[in-house]
Length: 214
Image (cartoon, rainbow, N blue to C red; front, side, top):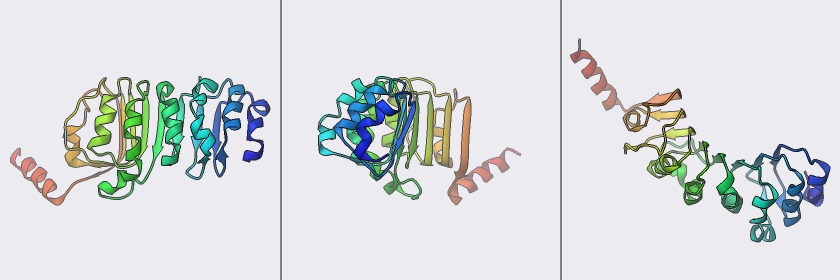
């Protein structure tokens, strides 16, 4: 999609349900055109999508233009105004950042989103491509309607918190063994962990405890 005819999108594709944008600036005319997409429920913005200054000022119109838009996927801090505008109506959010580093630097890129995600009171599904530290864990636990949490990065939390309501599913690419005891697993129906990692000292303690039970 080229921005030159982005204002015609709604008229040309009024039955769109899902829209993925890349390599273009978002202009106010494009936002207005979405009002013709009465069935649009999902919007995905790649990292190279630029929000024009005029569109950032008028971003509040997005909520009225796309009232059924409840699913959002973003990858850049520049998209913060879009997330903020849609926060009250979102039920699913995919937020991507660095997630493959073994330390806490992995979550730095997406820390800007913490207060905005905390305001997404209707979220039922949250998918994070970042390091889940105490800050993100605290926000996830306070979301009143969250059912499903997926972390496409590592999970390493040290505080035992209870979610506002029991989660049905939890997915993690990399889960610290020490974090297991702090996660609300009692009511989880689906648990998917790709890799479980532990320090040598922890493994020795587990082995020692197992040997003592024999």
